[in-house]
Length: 406
Image (cartoon, rainbow, N blue to C red; front, top):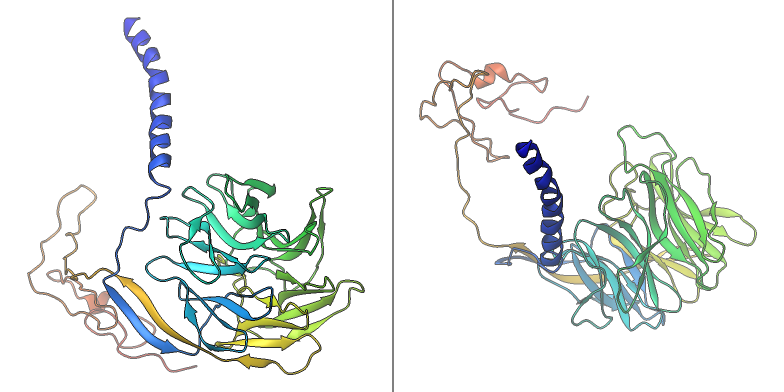
C-alpha cells in the first residue's frame, strides 16, 4: 500500500515537470538567433533570378524584392538594386506598408520563421511575431496600416490559417480558421479592408495530385462569412487586387503551364493576362508560396511580376509586357569554414547483434559527383550487387554515363 501511495504521489510531479521544462524552453528559444556565423561568401553579379517575390511602393516609384534570401529595392524603371538585408537569415516576401514607410517580410533570423518589420529605406529590423515552430507565408498589410494578415501554421494546430497581428506588436489572433487539414494561403485585402481574398486547399500536398488543388475564397470581416470565388480545374491561387477595386489577378494552370488570370470584378469576365509565366508549386509543399508575390501599380494599369528570370511590367489592357532590367551585386552568406571529414560507416551487424566482418582497410572508390566513400567488405563485390538499368556501373555501383534519351 505504501508503494502504491508513493507512486500516486509522484504523478502530479511527473505532469508538472514537462510543463515547467516547456515553459523554460519557450522563454529561452524565441530570440536565440541563428547558430552559424558567416565566414564564407558567394559574391557575384546577376541580372536574372528565379522565384522573386516583389511589391510596388504606394507612390509607384520603387520595387522591393527578394533574391536568394536577401531583400533589395530599386527604381521601378530598373537599374542597380540596393541591398536591404544580408547575412545568414533567409528573408523573403516583402510588402510595403500603405504609407510606404515600412516593409513587412518573413525571416528566420530569430532562429525560426517569424514576421518582421523594417524601414523601407533599410535599417534595423524589428520582430513582430514571436515563438518557434510556426510557418509564416505571404504577409499583407490592411489598408489602414495598423494590422498585418499572414498565413501561419501554428504548432500543434494543423496547416496554415489566416492570422491577424497588430503592427505595434502582440501575440496575434487567428482571424480565419478551419480544420487542421485546411490550408489558407496568400491573403489579399480590398481597399476598404473588409474582404480578405485567399487560396484554400485540403492537405499540404500529395503525390500524383488530382486537380484542382487550390481555389480562391473570400472572407467578410464584418459578417464572418466565407465564399468560394473560383472553380477552375487548373486551380486558383495567389490572388492580388487592383488598388481601384476593379480587378482580381490570380495564378492558374492550363495544360502543363501556369499563367495569370485577370477578372473584372463587376462583370465576372475573365481572360489570360500573362501565359505562360513560370512553374507553380502546387504539387509540392509550397514552402515559399504557390507562386511568387506580385503587385499592381498604384494606377491599376499594370501588374509587376517576375518570370523567365526577369521582372516585368504587364499592362492590363493586353499590350506587350515590358521588362524592367535589374542588376544585383549579390553577397550571399554561405556559413562558417569547415573541414570535411571522411568517416567510415559502422560495420554491418546481424540481427543477433554479432558484428559483421571488419573492413579490409582498403578504401573503395568515391564517385566524383557525390564525394561519398563506400567501404569494400571482404568477398563482396559492390558492382555485382548494384546493377542498374542505366547500363554499366563503376566499382561503386554507380552509372558511368548518363542514359541516352528514349
